[in-house]
Image (tube, rainbow, N blue to C red; front, top):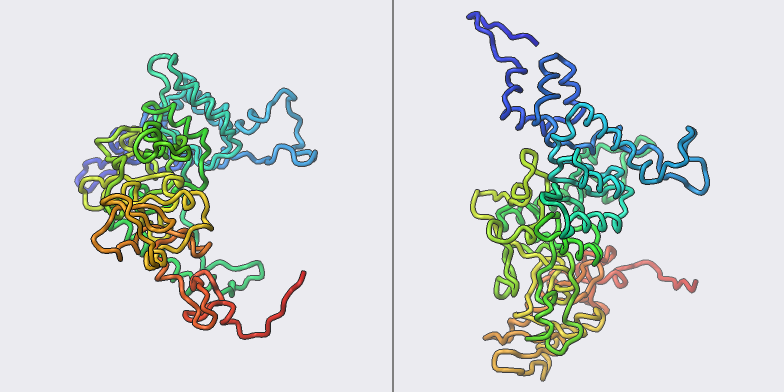
Length: 500
């Protein structure tokens, strides 16, 4: 790796000269896997010195692609069958076994004086027991600021909650904990997969299913790309938390996690935030619309639904107000994916990147309990408490909801409560508009189990009435139906009744 000599006799710049520049190494190292860094260090003494001594080399450490970080023997014991042929110490606990690969990697990094330089640690999909997380948070040999545990295996969540609550206790030492952000609830980034049309089954022939044909795959892929492009254009950002993305988390977190996030408020940020709806405020339960109602107040819950930057479909706002990057507190903004490569700060992890470089859009997020009866799962249109309040029946029971448009058109369906507030059937109350026909766009109901709760506009698009039997059906989820007949009337073969 010596310097190259040009035609004029002047030495050219080598790779070691470039990487010795701190700015170049800081911008380049996060893109290299760990195996590539070690391979680079093995090429020459100068590069080895740069990789193993510069703090920027391992500032962003992603172990999710390292083969030695995975546990080879899972499960630990399946039905009394011997899980490993080698003899092991009987004092070895289950957590120590599952954390063995990562502890070995951390020991090697510590011996080479590299572990203290790691500020962003990615452990997505690996075996990470709660005891190992406790060591990362509490021990001085670690200096991690951003930790990613998405889809981690063998992670006891209740024990992790205890670890986090102990780390943020009021009597903790000054300057602790060092960790400032944790990715835990969202899905991890997936590596690009191969072309699905080139896959073949075990017999060596391509799949002949209708949904696996190339035309169907191309159509589904372009529909998905069109939807993403539309959401990006409307929200002016590619960050899904700021788009009309709907449900953001693969599973609903428990109420205990909401209490843990509440305890970590202002100390540790997460890739999820608490719902700030008015029903989570104890003061609103005893005053205003919640006075005298035992079912109005809700315990703290994590917001799982991204509603887009437009707010309520009627007033384009919300009672609690949107969260705005640069103005709202850290606890009101989630950590965004992907994880930042060149910085290990909460600001870099929470900053939305707009496509035109303009001001970041507002953030409207809520939990599903605050959106029950007021959020369309197809077009993601929603109404806040000031513009529409579903009835108690609509909030508790899905099957007892009545069709809103028929209630408006029926005689006596509209009842004046106050000067500007009117009641419409069993749906609830809302502000009195200038035209009664505006009620057709307020409220949701579940006409199809596949579509979920949809508004009147989406119902007119996807729900049809059979011209033969007169029953309503969803032409998208009922595979055997047509545009004019339901699946039962469209079936032309002989029918038989199966008694058993």
